[in-house]
Every structure is written in C-alpha cells, then in structure tokens.
Length: 341
Image (cartoon, rainbow, N blue to C red; front, side, top):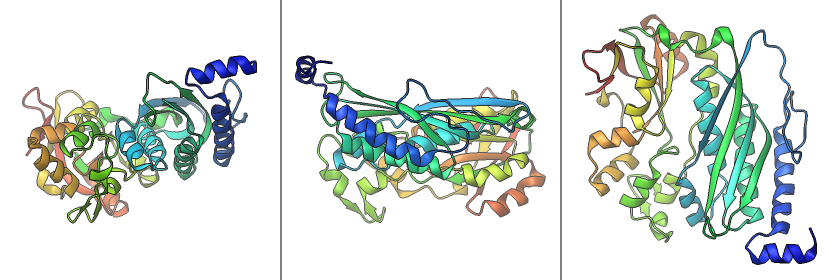
C-alpha cells in the first residue's frame, strides 16, 4: 500500500501502523500458550493444529462473547480481565460435553485501535488459555470507525476441544432421583450486564463504578469486573461420575438447566440451599426486579450445575468442597422442566 493510500485510509479512521503494532504484540503473547500440536505461528492466513493419541476423537466447538461487560472495562480503563472472561466462558461451555480444550481464536473489533488496550486484552486471553493448556493460535483485530465509537470494542472467542466418542457426556442417563449440585459463581460472570448497567446507573461516567459498597466489600467496578470462573480443572477428573453439566450463562436457571434434561423430567431447585451473593440482591433492589426475572437473567451465585446419581454424591462432593446440593431431578408433572421453590 502506497504512503498516499495509507494517508487516505488514516483519514477514514483506520490506522495501519497501530494494527501492525497490535499484531506484533499479540504474536509475542500468543507464543506463550504454545502446546504440543501447534504447527503454525500467529500471522498466517490460518492456524494449524495437529492432535494425536485419540481412538475416536470428536471435536467440540463453541463461540461466545463478553457482551456489555466490555463497557465496564472501557469506563475503568482496565482491559486485562475480559480476556479471561472470554476463555473461561468458552472452556466451561465445551466442558459440558466432556471436552478438553485444544485451541482458541479471538476477534476484537473497535472504533479506534489502541495497541496497548489490545495487548492487555490478549494478555488475559493468554493467561486463561495457559491455565487449561489451550493454545491461542489465531485471531483478528478490526478497526471499524463509524460502527464503534472511540473507546468502544467488542470481544468474541472461538474454541475447539476434543473428547473421545465414548466419553461424551451422556445426559440421556439422567434419571428421577438424581442429585443436583451447584458450584458457586464469582459474580455475574459474563451475563446480565445490560440490565445491571441500567439499574445501577452506569452510563458513560465511571464515577458510579468507583463507589465503595460495604455489602460488596469493594468498589462496584471491582465487583463487576471479577472474572468468569473456570470449572475445568475441578470437574475434569470427575467427569466419569457425572451425568450432566449445565453452564449457567445467558438465560439464567430457566434457560440452561432444562437443556440437559431428558423428556419427562424436571429439575426441582431449592433456592434456600445457597446464599445469593450481595451483588444480585443489590441489582434486584435498585431495579425493583422480580425474583422470577432475576433467575431468568442471572446465575444468582451458581455458575455450574452438576447432576450425578445419589450413590456418587458423596464422592463428588468430597472433591468439590464448595459444591452444594441445590435440588433433585423428578418426573415432570407439567410442561415446566424447572421448578424453583
């Protein structure tokens, strides 16, 4: 591209030099996640990964974003945790199928490319990838003036994992009488931020985020940027003893637990079985949100639901110290597959 063309592109709002710098920073960070099977360096038109050691490998893929949690990051100028959110969300999703992560790709779109912001975001992605032995093998940065305002960005991640065909999570084995365990979340995770921002008065001023809340024990911004918890390391060794996993993300309890239940069964959840974290109570009170809607939008302090047979409960809980029995599977007496009481 000639210098004249570059100048014209810059006048249109796209900075080629900034993009080149961001790509170089990403390349250096991504190299820290290399694991056996990675065949290419960042920068080619495609990332290559070779996996061995499986008899009947089944690839499991997922794509997700961080949603409007990135608005909180932008307002506070803190971008090193949303990448952690992104990876952990995707890892948890494929874990529900019994899969282990292999490689990850990211997409960052912004109104104005700031290389140090991108570096911070990708450093979080790399950290979370290394924690679960997942390689960051590629991605894309897009500067899109006019589509995104300066300071705004969107963040999306793509993950591919693998599971032996015989080890795929068989939710069809779930029966009436099975135990439902809940693993605690670390807060909102990556869902419900549009509602949270509205009811908590978070618009374009970071001031509300810097307010200290005694019930939270920290500032609102610190609470809302708490990274999405990853359950992979805890649950991977226990998968042979587990019948089903439901990642409580968008749609809350109602939108996620019924997805793994066979026809004719319902989940009976006891809301008194765990203590709902203060952030959810704060949102409910400030926004005058009904309890039913809270459970339809947020995880309410339970980030992953685990279903196991009664005879496996003691063994599973001995390993998962934080797990709580929050309900049981029962025959469905109505079309409703989730009963909250």
